[in-house]
Image 1: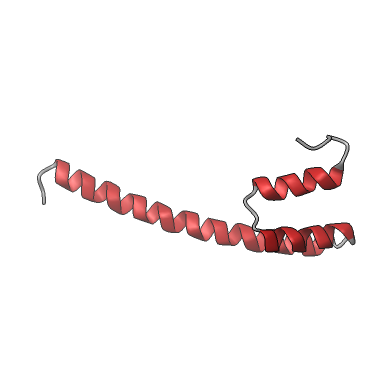
Image 2: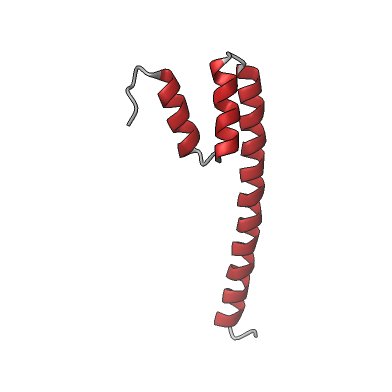
Length: 77
């Protein structure tokens, strides 16, 4: 666990906790160190959109499984 006063270490840990890969982490850290927070925000927004897309895709798959399960349980297949 990073020191609560070490903002750079906390930022890095948060990127890791968010599941950022090494490339995205490196890019965000580079921007962070140079004070380019607008670029960090753009990178994170893009990453968030990608995660959300995958989440919605997985939710659709879960919905299909639930539909099939219900049909089978009602002897409709």
